[in-house]
Length: 94
Image 1: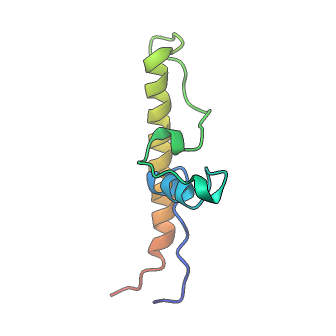
Image 2: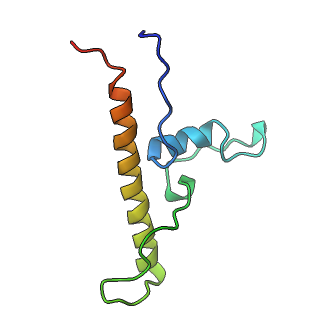
Image 3: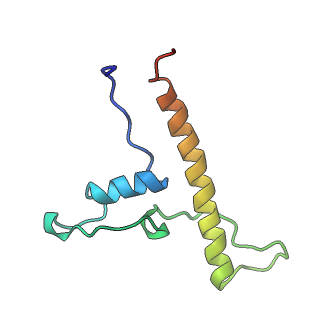
């Protein structure tokens, strides 16, 4: 209505990862579409997270997976806040 284009959500967020999946970001051909619920496998990989626990030992197994997912969630929230702040400028004041 305002004549402005809404930017897609960042692919690091759940909504953005699903949009990317649906629009072909993870597909080989047009006929290979598979419906999917959101999961951490759709998110871009993250490498800059702490792989060391509070005791100073290297994280392994489930603890390492939890730390990675926690870091992905923090990144998603930060990126969503940035995206929403940018889109808020599109909303007219009432």
